[in-house]
Length: 473
Image (cartoon, rainbow, N blue to C red):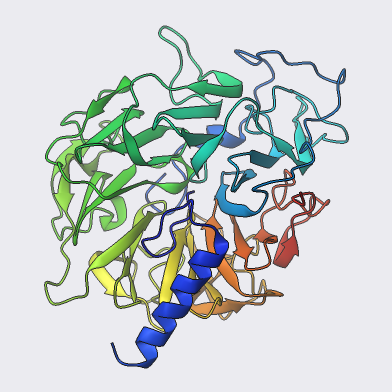
């Protein structure tokens, strides 16, 4: 998931971001999936013992591709979280990843890492992971995205995209997506200004303002007017001045784009995720499981008197926007309180509602069923699902209980505070974990940790933040 802090360039470094946050604080003081809340494609966690492609993979024969003694431009400036892996970008463009590597998410060309057996209990096939950051091979990145999937993508200096991990679609005539253990250029993406990737879908705003997308399209989430998958990116219909795009966390079926103060969404409308106040668009699914969807982008029904949105982030069946007033509004499913409303009282909303209990917010990050925010003072708050401790406040026992599917799980519709050792300057959320980049340059993570995606040397979930080890220069 790509970090967006205010409207600054991602290359500006953490000190510029902190200065912008301070400016916002002073300005405020002076008065100026599955769309029921579960990921729709759990292939990210499914066993698959035979890689379709393992370029230059040399399991056990060579040491892990550890950071090579960085001496210049070493500060971490961006983080991006997948389903069971995490990545960070240095100012000099080096990308480091840690966590699960079943599909090549670490991008260093290896299929096994020292001490990296992360096979779940009862699984037959071994799964590889790395508890320490390793260097993604052969790329110098200017931006990252992962969006809770089993792949990552990087924007390069020439405004093209390079991706590693699970491919968006099976090869022609194949029955399962391929694996990329090193970064590969994605054909058709050129002139990229901003982008978003969740393994199933890749979308990018390009020079001139249009939006191009490729990948799975079973709910029309590519916005191309149909539900046919695309191997090559094509221009979405009806958009011409896109400032930002966000695909759903975890591979579910929703894409939203921002054009100035207007927000548009395409894909599944389960849980009222399109946010346009309309109950019936087109029919997707099959005769046994039909559901409403829109294969073209429809406008989110925002209150005309509301402050303008400056950032969007899409979860599984819901989405949130940060406003230039510092407020946050969300719409769609509320199965885990991710809209900031008691799920026992409100199951969904087909138009945006303001999340109460937040300060002057300068960054937001939606996971599959939870959301985290960063305020202008460097404080982090989270709300929504908490079955893996992804709210980060140290508790697995909040007052509310939520029911995504059939299992009761912990959640909080009220934002709770995450205690960190220093002020944060950026946040990201993955499938069921979140991370914060601190003013000190350290990265702290919390939540799900089955594949060592928290980088703390364990495989235990952590309800409080732990430091990612090995990101030092």
